Image 1 (cartoon, rainbow over the protein chains, first blue to last red):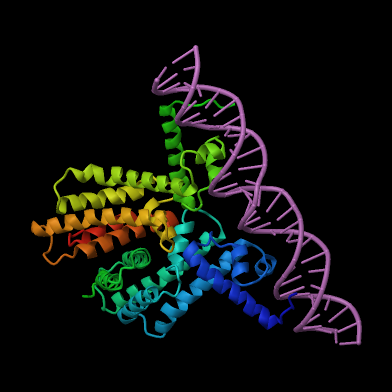
Image 2: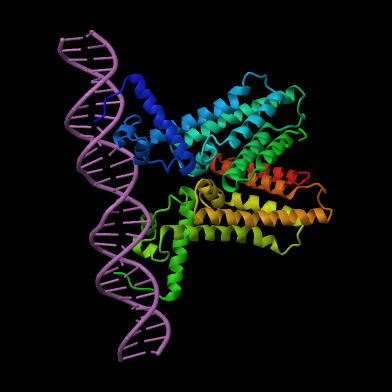
Amino acid sequence: MSPRKSAAAALETRDAIVARAVAVASTDGLEGLTIGRLAGDLSMSKAGVIGHFGSKERLQLAALEEAVGIFTRTVWEPVASRPAGRERLLAICDAWVAHLESGVFPGGCFLAAAAAEFDGREGPVRDGVVAALGRWRAVIERDVRAAVAAGELPADSDPAQVWFEWNAFAMGLNQALQLHGDASAPDRARRAMRRAIGVPG
Amino acid sequence: MSPRKSAAAALETRDAIVARAVAVASTDGLEGLTIGRLAGDLSMSKAGVIGHFGSKERLQLAALEEAVGIFTRTVWEPVASRPAGRERLLAICDAWVAHLESGVFPGGCFLAAAAAEFDGREGPVRDGVVAALGRWRAVIERDVRAAVAAGELPADSDPAQVWFEWNAFAMGLNQALQLHGDASAPDRARRAMRRAIGVPG
DNA sequence: ATAGATTACGAACGATCGTTTGCTAAATGG
DNA sequence: CCATTTAGCAAACGATCGTTCGTAATCTAT
């Protein structure tokens, strides 16, 4: 009843599964992902879905990887070519807020949801979340240090504190948008993030 | 094989179920709650568990209500008798951070987890989360207004902005503790919350 | 003392979970 | 051109899901 696809088309199938998994997981959580539901959404058999990954956990990891890729492409890559420092930090701030505001993920920030969901468990998925957050944290802290070294930010700026506050504001913005539909939240987040690095709003 | 209990003892049974449900949901999420697992943990039958609530959703609502009660008792009630204003805001800040630090919920802040889990859905559970957060928000904003009126905080303090930032810091602290075991996070959160209301750390 | 309400049980319901097994059919490699 | 690999399906696996039903046992109220 179903003809086989070429190797290239099979990759497209895999991508379609991952894309759908990201969308579903952003609203229902990575644990709420279901092989059967994905199969139904994509008009495939359950075996056809799971065959690309081997297990549900590897499917979750693929969805996580794709979500991290989306975040990287929409927030980091547009500003990556700028020199490290205050300018790029402000660009990151705007891109980050715009990303959360844009509704790329129907259920809100994928990483925030995954972090909240897996923060009390163990395993590869949790490890992947921790690693992704760690990489992003390193990016932010590096730019804070560069900005301080260049005299663009107060000399007593604490990179770890900036990361703590920025990450918190991103989570707060995500909650305000998803839970309350608060249209004033993006402005609040931008102002708070600027103030956190000593830049007047 | 199992004798019936008195009305008073039945309430104890119900309380035991809710207490266990709160603990499980704080790590595995409200959707991860399972009648069968609860029954096994409490050496009861599934019917005996669900009989007290009627449905899983009402069990989730009972767990949410209990978690909100715990938060209220440990964070709000100890400071409720103080007069509204800057003093009480600082006391709330300390109690809030201490609460998250204390590990009352094995899986971290129950409300934060429930908010992240249900922010993309609809129904009574989501409504309950929104309502609980709204009540807490009203408490914070009222005290900010009182402190401004008393001249204890800068006249241009924005109550909604203070709530946004405090709530964000609480989420950030919860993530830092649960996901990274970051022992420096409580201090960071306290400092950030104080700075958010213009109080030097 | 007796009748009714209530707690909790065991058992079963259909549905769905993740996964495995054979199979077909098409694309690929020699 | 033929052998091998591979994508995907249909079907079934045991397990578990939330829920319902009937029943036994005990408390409560008359």
